[in-house]
Image 1 (spheres, rainbow, N blue to C red):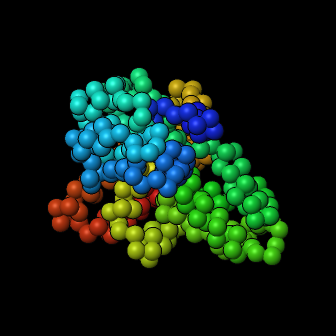
Image 2: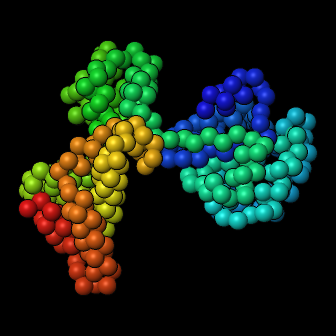
Image 3: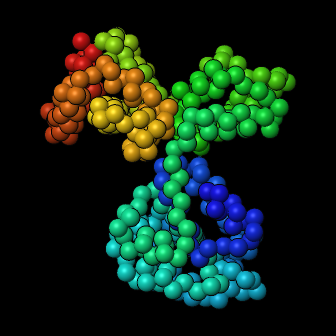
Length: 324
């Protein structure tokens, strides 16, 4: 990310930038910073393509158009899937990209064996936008609040992360709510966070799995019923339970090999504080139990799809079975 900031500062740009990864907020921020630096308000020399209107032929035709009364033409391609599918024509074009052109590609997932990826790597700059560390997020939250002359304690900051997860878009949204709520004061407290910040579904799932791990059956069921009250579909809740069990299984396996929490976070693409939660929960589950739970979830999903089991009851039975 520093490379992009330096390029913007110097006004000297690579031919192609690829921004990919889990952190949507950072991808949008750096996409917009590049757009503002290269094209500004110029609409004549700027084109945007997404998954709905992305045709390689159309994109190349636009790229071949010389800029009009400007030094650069900017083309942004977002969530096109070109970095996961075979596309020799685009890969060959990128290798010989005109010097008046800057292409910014924004994707969630990429295949590093892909020819387009390799072409970008040879002529441009690739930046993976990973989930940020707890320390980075805490510093960022403090910085956002400081703009409105607000301070926050470490405990309150940790509670924000517990409630929101690591997604920076959602953190920013909840931080803005805190700024409005705390007008006329100079400190954000734990009580403020409890009152103002909404708990994301994923945080409810963490709490539910913790209750299951500690055999607190009623608490686990109450959390499930809370999610249903929030209009979360049972099958989405099941999907999140599966994702949670999978995360715990991965972390438990890597822990058994002596791999550090920081390395685990990098390997599974999760924020370190999320890995810390997985590590805490992993102590309460045997590997066989996790594998059995995942198998049971798969059977439940199949039974629901085939109409043999009610979705709400199916998830409830899983919670009951593993919290006994």
